[in-house]
Length: 436
Image 1 (tube, rainbow, N blue to C red):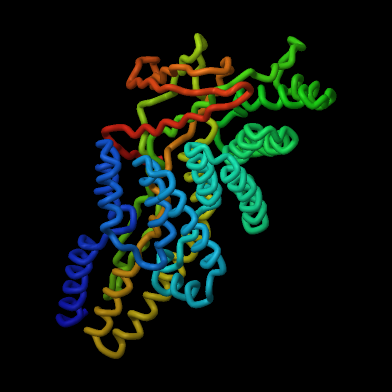
Image 2 (spheres, rainbow, N blue to C red; image 1 turned 180 degrees about the vertical axis):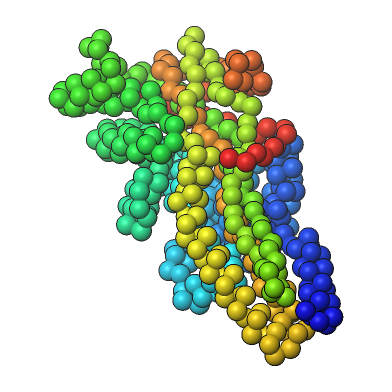
């Protein structure tokens, strides 16, 4: 290699080092918002988020994070306006254009419009429904429950495997139907949720929630489906023969624990032997953001109950990405080959041009680290039967050893035969990440 070639290669390597240090992936640009969330300053996190523009391809994510931040700030109507805007945009962008596909091959996967992973698109409707429940607008919540079904059906046509459905969204739809007295529709949703939990349990450790088992037993007994009730009782090892009774009232408590895992870039920069250029491979990986809260203890109307996991967002996200990794890796390797060939072609014409083409290829090879970062890491739930009336509810957040990390009280009003749905979001004051 002559002096000019060595100089060009050294110059290119230096430029690459400097340029890569100054480039940020999507997840890296969210650190300020995360810090405000960890400090409990939800309004400030929303202000900071609003101050940052997003390119058109990332607009869906920008709207989803804004909607969740508005929910955390207590503005449920604004949150649902943002969710509606995200829904409309997803519908517009779902048909991926040939131009976008070509761009993702030539540049990187983050050049395509982000329309959300299946679980994110299901949870969009779930959180919109929860907003309506918080507002006391049960008919609007029912519309979201119907949209959950339509969304999951459409996803099942486009996606393979268990992760095309979402157990919690199915379960929440059933709760909404039952809240409105639509027992048959509630039972259908509970059955679908049961099937989804079974399918998800084959991929990662999640059990069918005991509260869902109680619901299936209660409703099958209530509508007189004796054979199905017996099958469920046998499947759940409930041999006492007594069917759960319909409650005079009920409090349903949801704990939205921590934050969803964050995608980071894993990069390898290589110098091929005898080749005066540098190549780079960048792939995404999830890093969970652990929460010290293991469960919540609920005390209301003289009864105690403990929450259990009804949605493990951490596990669903990791398994979803794992299923995509073969295709992501194949595209990355194909880009490496194409960019290598382009650099060699330019270098044969002019050494400096080759260096610049090599630099451009390196700078554009970025992992797609986009995801809905303000989702919780998991959702937990419990259902507590209570008499009608006004009750003081004590919610204690527990560590894995049972120590109380935080506690709060609130007043709940339960009508005769009615249900009060209570949500508590909790984000640790110190956010940490670890490799899965």
